Length: 92
Image (cartoon, rainbow, N blue to C red; front, side, top):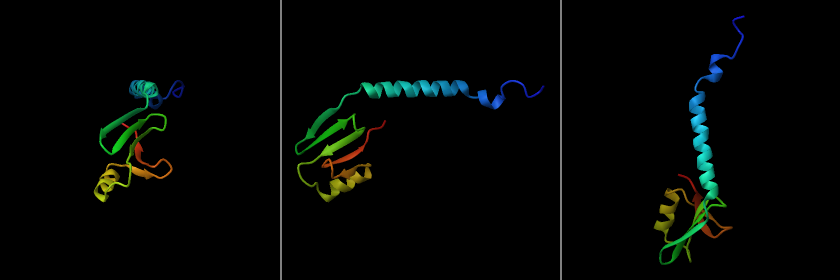
């Protein structure tokens, strides 16, 4: 008769899991309501916050200098030849 009921390990931390899932749902709803935005912070390039592709894209009119390319790589950007831009995932 000792084994009847729900094992204690299955219900431990359930309130924390509920809070975590609620926060995740709120973040997903906020992300789905977002729209694609375009910025032109300086002459010669533009930045697009592409929500549909979940990417932050940086477009240059020509190949940027080596220092700029290295800085983009250090910040997690990668070259996307199919799009013709440098891009990184949108995240917090």
